[in-house]
Image 1 (cartoon, rainbow over the protein chains, first blue to last red):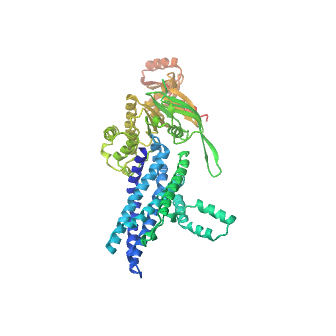
Image 2 (tube, each protein chain N blue to C red):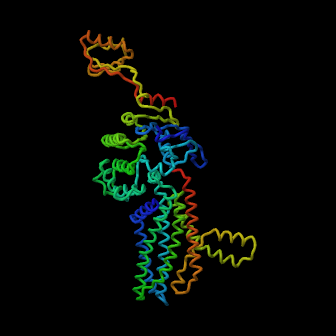
Image 3 (cartoon, rainbow over the protein chains, first blue to last red):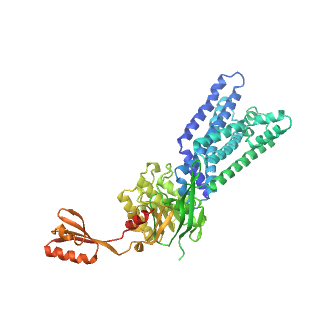
Length: 254
Length: 305
């Protein structure tokens, strides 16, 4: 399968990139910093460690997806490596999907590495391995899959800097769009409400993937919500990738 | 015989700028490349050589025209299975080593692992890059990149190899080596399509050429037919005879160290000059009939544009 060949090479490219290790280093620092914050806190210190740790994993994971993802396709075009690739029996959508899967694989490995540091810190503090925390990491992963798709979409027609800004905007909008939902509940029905409902449906809602506080406080998470969020992430990512392929397929590589 | 590559009335225009302005790059290119020949695609910079090649490879979508590779549509992956391509100024994944790089491209053709290792070893030997096989590509020089790029183009044992300016930016030794490899490819029965703006490259190795200027093919055919055998004039180098005596027979081009270079246009005058030299006790150092070169043809064609 040519997709897996591209994916493996993308993985190789990502793990030989120094930016990755810099981000991983800061992620580790950030996770361990949770321990310092806990010292300054009155109350349940373990919850603080867990909360800050998971938030760090989420934030740095998103940064990795955006910073690596936006450069992936653009670099191939800019450095003209794509010329020789597309001259081989490789279809354009296979190239794009290979790039996507390669980065998803990279992010999975990075999430595993960050989770390891995180779990070790929690273990040192509580004396137990809290595997249930990993459920939150799995949903962070779903979010990263979606962000990767968005990064690749922008990367297929724009420069890395612009793409990074677009993808970052997507990330921020995605995390604040839930406030629109709150607003909708308070509005009387009418044109404004219909319009806002439309906007809310269109915008990504990345808070769907945030089950961190439920996991940390050991609150029950509804099975339906878990199922819905996973499906939401995958369908949204598939839609974005489809869009990227449509744009990429008709492009001239001058 | 079916042509390996045929291009029919290919047209492409680009729109650039904030207020898009149409710029025609290809204005009806038609050519066909037969099996087992080295086909030279000759033209000045910006004539549309690379654009044509990119259309063939499916990197650019033409506005009009048809391209067939091995009798199939050029975008058919089955056609690309038998194609090798080396781009102009190749730049590859600098984080891979030479061996990893070739292996990656071999995988794209789904070549089994054991077979890949064997053909990589063979190709590294062919392009004389065995020593650098395990060096990352970012440490490669220009000439090394060109060679590993050529190896990459041959990984699938292609029937047709498309080379965009394969001799560009190489030193004389490197040029000779690449030329030898191209000739060897033809001896193996492969078809080679190469573009160049340098006449000598094409003149030395190509069987057939097409000349492209401003997006149009001005001439196409066997090199021997284009470069006619008729003698345009003869250059004779003479010493021991007065310039004034020679003036009646031809134009004196230069006089250096007692030797005169005489340009004689009429064949009958050649005998007369030789008789004169003998009579005066002079000496003929050389006598060279000049035929039309590709350069003359090229200059003739480009000038009116």
